[in-house]
Amino acid sequence: MRPIRLGLAAALLLIAGGPAAAWEAPTATPPGKPQRIVSLNLCADELLLRLVGPERLAAVTWLARDPGASTVAEPAARVPVNYGTAEEILPLNPDLIVAGRYTTRVAVGLLTRLDAPLLELDVPQSVAAVAEQIRGLARAVGEPERGEELVADLLSRLDALPPAPPGPRPTAVVLRPNGFVAGSGSLVDELLTRAGLENMADRLPLGSQGALPLEAIILGGADVLIVDTAPDAPPSLAGALLHHPALRAIGQQVRTLSLPSRLWTCPGPQIAEAAERLAAAREAVP
Image (tube, rainbow, N blue to C red; front, side, top):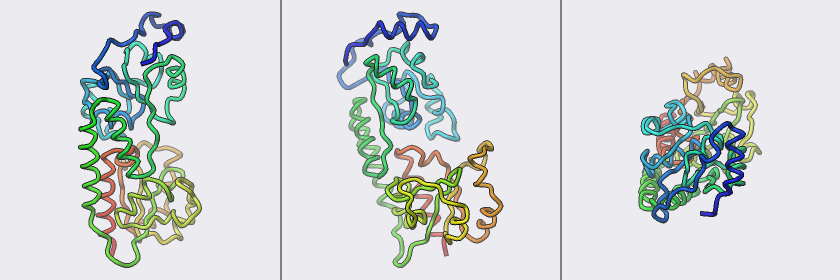
């Protein structure tokens, strides 16, 4: 690990009102086996709790304990939480910090300037990339065998999905808040394909993400409408479109699948369950 610039760390902690000497270099640990891991990202929380368990985690995000957003809420209850600030992380003396490519950017910027032991996870857009990310993080925490176990279970469940019958596939659209849907080149698109569904958004020039007008959803003739939210989610302007009367009317003509977003918001082993539910919805289409 590169030497940490203690002077800058001390200044940062003084600004935050914390003790200037709180950030110290971690004591030596076996190579490849970090013992005080901090996560700044929900998706990192989920992978880390599957790879190393609570005993080697100094902190996970507060979202990890929310059963509506997290698939690891139970083990996360045994780990301290953080809210994504560098001031919280430094006193924990972590020997590995795992962040997301697009989250907690202020904290990541400060930690990078301090030469902290930082690993950033990207957002995989395919099952193959998900498997590689699991393997990469497993190597970083010194648990390559556990990583291979997770990947093997994920791939075996996906390979066991019932094959789609010959002929045209049922069309499906994943509707997210504000009308955003997942198009070609996305992980969601691959899961739909593996489940035997045709992504209706793939017919439009959206790229991996885009907003689909409500009129296009109504007139598109989808066989399956996948609502990417939980029924008990708190109300929001972004989610108001999901409760539009026109969509409720569609629900009487097409099959609606309520798929908890926690199953495929993060690229991890839990996406196998999302694919299984999608395949079951496809088999239920006349």
